[in-house]
Image (tube, rainbow, N blue to C red; front, top):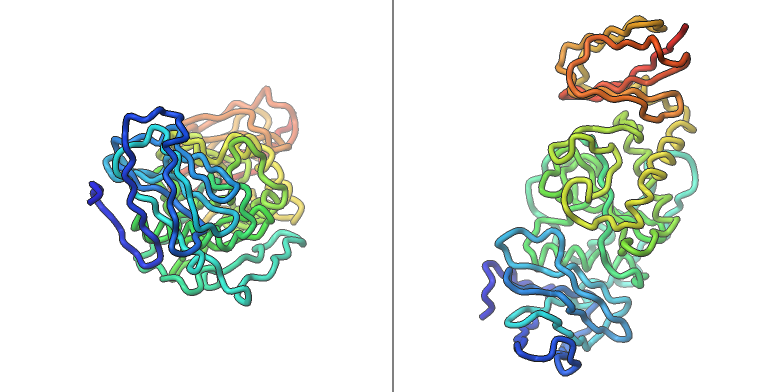
Length: 406
């Protein structure tokens, strides 16, 4: 019997116990452990105990080799899981090179018969052309057909930050619906999670899939489980694939930009702004998973693209004629900033405590910021022109345009 604190058994997952001897050469080919499956499988992960080590371990499936790593969402003291491994095609034979892994473990496999939709049910390609608006996307009832629905109490969420992720899975997969079904099964049927944690998943070809089931709420307003165990106020979007060493495809980036632009203009959030979060007092409105805790997600290549992504989302919103500074958030404080135009001193009055204040120039670049409760600003030396003052209170972020004159 495996020494796991919890173990989820499911008809949708094949369980293969592993007993890995110790004392072999660390890189000897004699360590290969072959597993023949009773039915073809399309995805896998490994369950192991907290004291075990996956260093140097990999799976061989068909002509492909997959380096194993620990899932970054493992909880301390709980059984560990490897990150999901998605196979480009169904396989009936898998070889494990255990590396430093010894002792008892378990190989968890997703059968193709559950993960692959019948061809007649596959979603049609999604058209991402056109102006800003809610992009078309694949509904849960389509990609989850034939699988058990999640059953848990959803929580409504007011979004302040959009968090970008990658699934850290193979970039060779081309059947994206099967990939999402496999991730859903591995999360819910092996780990016992209630649902996929992301609000949306984006395939490399730009197709958007609705992720976490919103129940009675809107897809973009249900609380997810994706940001370092501190999810309130965040919306999670994940791209299928691993973008640590490979840049994400342009179609996927375009889809994410469309989706984020729609969400931010809907909620009147500034794509170039910062909204403080318990994990990061200077968290960008558009941020990466690693901005909240120690993780490689969303990969070095994708993370490096976030500044450009923020600017493109900003331009998308501007091109629609929507002025975020003229559309205050709901539940906003009463805020007065005067005089406007201003020559020397600005007075700031609010009926709620101000936590943070930012000044942007007319091109949207941050030129100054202040933490605390300012009541007056000396703008005597500012260059003449338009500025945006962003005020962060407990219940809202408000932007005001100010004209500086001589």
